[in-house]
Image: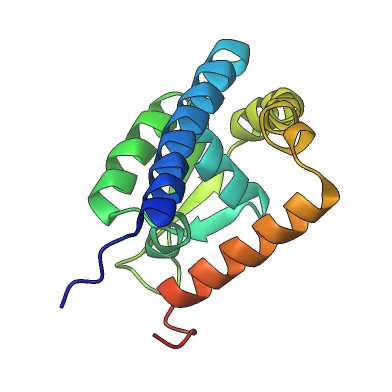
Amino acid sequence: MTRWLDEREQVAWRGLLRMQARLQGELHRRLQTGSGLSLTDFDVLVALTDRPDGRCRVLELATLLEWEKSRLSHHLARMQKRGLVAREECDDDGRGNYVVLTAAGRAAIEAAAPGHVETVRELVFDALSDDDVAALTRITAAVQARLDGRAPR
C-alpha cells in the first residue's frame, strides 16, 4: 500500500525541492558572474583542494561528487581545456587516472571562494538561527544516513 504524503509533508517536500532548485540556480549565477566558474567546476575544485596533494582518482572523485563517470569525464575534459585540472596516469595501476589540481585551478578557486562563501552566508545562514542550523545539521545527517543505508527503514 502506498503511503501518500499528507498535506504537511507535501508542503515541506515541495518547498524543499523549490528551495534547492532556486538556491542551486542562484549560487551558479553568482559564482559564474563573479569568477567565471560554474557550480560544477567549483564542486570539482573543492574536492581536489580538500586533498593534501590536490589529486584524486577519477572513480573516487565520481563517487565523492555522486556523479556518473561519463558526466565527470566530460566535465573534466572541459576543465582540462581551461587549464583548471590535469590528468595523470596512476603509476600503480595503468588503468586508472588521477585528476590533479593545477596552479590555475588553485588560483581560480582561491579567487572564487570568498564570494561564494559570502553568497552562501547571505542566502542561507543569515536567514537561520543557531537552533535552525543545528536542526538543519540533524536533518541532513539523518537523510544522508538513510541514503547510505546506515539508518533503519
